Image (tube, rainbow, N blue to C red; front, side, top):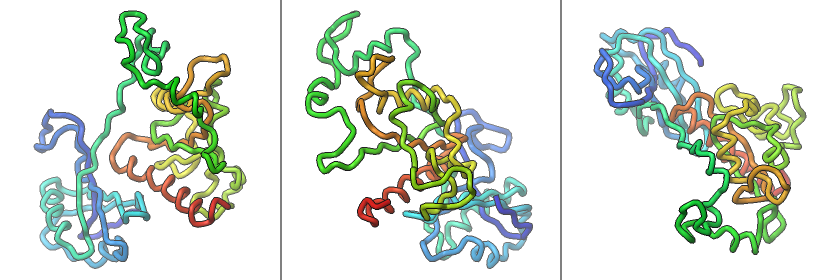
Length: 280
């Protein structure tokens, strides 16, 4: 984060559960932190430097951009007195160029069952075994008769972006279906394909600013397995798509700001793909 020691500010917060902390906020909230949505032409640094807050004990201001397109979003934090920060939040919302100010909250991962019978994948084709309800499923066999993924009708490679807590990139059911940015040279510190991201070979880590997505995350690997575990290979399970390329984006710490930052990467890549008519 960049830092400003000024009598002014910009900031963001997070939420967890119903319990209250001593300052009156839910313990799930990241105190003094906010997501700031600015109009496209508004500069955050200009906004901060132009503010002249009086009678406010603001302290140090920290901020970082979490998205440039399609929204101009910033994560901001004031390390000052809590009562002062709370009062300034309302004043920020009324400033010219500020579209919205919202609390940055913790987000929770969707649960993945740890039941041993989950591996039978009854959700695809339910024949009523093990006490299940016949046909309470996705009828994936009907879809697989038409396609198991891979390419579109026009021959384009199908890519699905998985935004989660990382992945086990060496998993035998996942490794062959992982997307790789082959126009980027690994580890040279350059943006070889001019997409705005440096060394994004394996995907993107929205917090660390690199392609560190391989961290053996069980949750991210489970989600990727549902979407695109390699099918008909005699190993483990099959995904909804047997053949697909999965672009992995690691959101790092599970907060709304980090999730929003993660969406910027697939948006940028998809836009570049469309603008260059699939050349990139």
